[in-house]
Image (cartoon, rainbow, N blue to C red; front, side, top):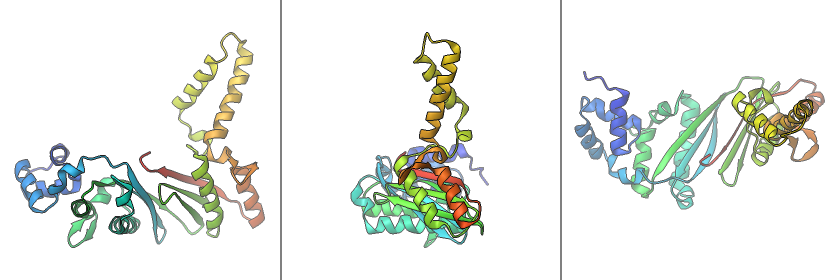
Length: 280
């Protein structure tokens, strides 16, 4: 049996624009013959949409689905907002989000290769929708949250799924509304990191260099103090736990969490968050 290498799959994908899962199936079926694999894809009706596959997909929607203790977030893209509002598109995106939550794929490639219906994978079925609707449609990314019995998840969708945020609160499974309020804050405030410790060293150094360049000629001890102040201000701007709560700017998000924990009689902690916007 011919060894179907990643390079061979990539070659077929580059030539056809078809998803990697479908390319692998075609190569397996044709024992690694790329020309025959292209014909195989065409016969299956998958490669008939090749030209559409190459077109830009700048619109889309982000959806969430929960199955048991797993929450899946999926972004689906199309060329126009008209298609994003199409019932067939919306049904497909919501269905694949539930499939992801059930199957727990470990990568986008594994997600696209999951069975959908009528013997077709998720990616193969996506191609049939491209063919029927007449626009390029792509599944851009998938993310999973695994919850335990002492966890709450808050989900917030903004602008019809143009922005979706998720916040994980540890310490209670009864804090979904509270977590959703923080998720709503994240949608508006746009944090990039959860806490200062998560800011990459190169980004931090860049911020320090920018601050230093603005204070040339000042004594070193003065510069160090001002730079530290600017870095703290940067943390307040980009770290979720350090941001001022949009509904009450007298509190940071961390202070809000601490207050909620005291009121409920149990310590609460935000351990993860996600903020996706279409194309970002």
